Image (cartoon, rainbow, N blue to C red; front, top):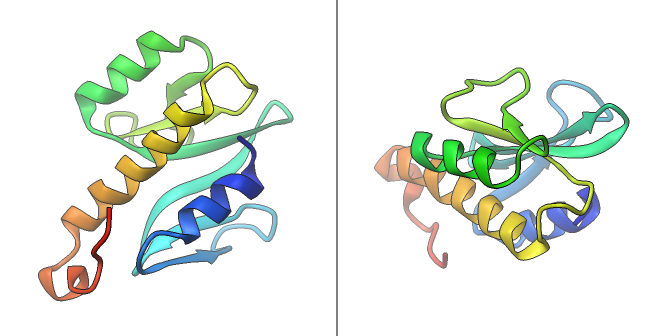
Length: 119
């Protein structure tokens, strides 16, 4: 998967938007006002930062050493960076993106979660 495909998939989730709060070349997917995916580059290769549970973060890093790493410039316990070089299967990346969205939605205030159905 590449950035374009991930953005398209992420924008298909309820209540999402694409913003550029840090850099005009660094897209970020938000649900309401919380980010769930930050798209960037690692050593010239596209990457994505995704929220995950601490146990899942460890498992993903062990399953894909060197391409799923602790979140770059993020909380290393709750975020992973996935280097998009084709090593991690597309369906796994899509699942990681969906789970990141769901984790962020679960932490939103109840009033902001309303209307976020689907996944």
